[in-house]
Length: 184
Image (cartoon, rainbow, N blue to C red; front, side, top):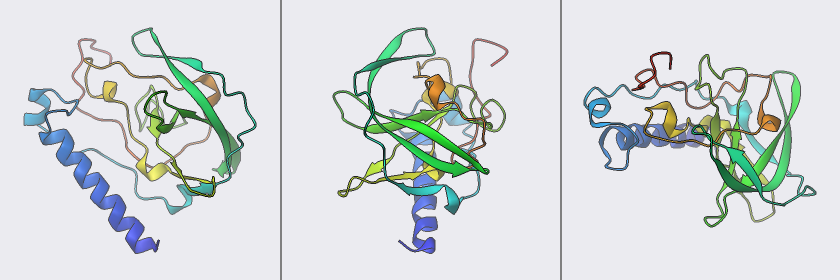
């Protein structure tokens, strides 16, 4: 896909995401947040963080329990590991498969977490190609629904997916969180 088509596709995704947040009945935003909707903020597109990777599938595929923001756990199945370079550092992330739905996801924290992005981390959904490679485009990384208000419980990235390097791509922190906790 050409760079222009990638940019156009990303812009359409971001426009649709804003519209979903602002108007859809399944939006995580409260009615009050919808009324005073502030569009989501994003890093500028970073073509260097659109990756096509050969995953390492030689890992333990036993289900694991990942913690959540309300202290419970959710089961995921490790699918593979991916390694790549960001900010001059080689990093490795575990890719998980969601039981039941089968969706692949990578929950992660990085050096932007708690500053430019939501403190509990973000997620990116890799796309599996027929040849087994994964397309991982961090420009599509998104914050969990719990970043918008306290009505939601979110899965936390495992410690192994905490990066010291910044992944400056995707969604930034939502500025208008509704919270019963004044320090959020």
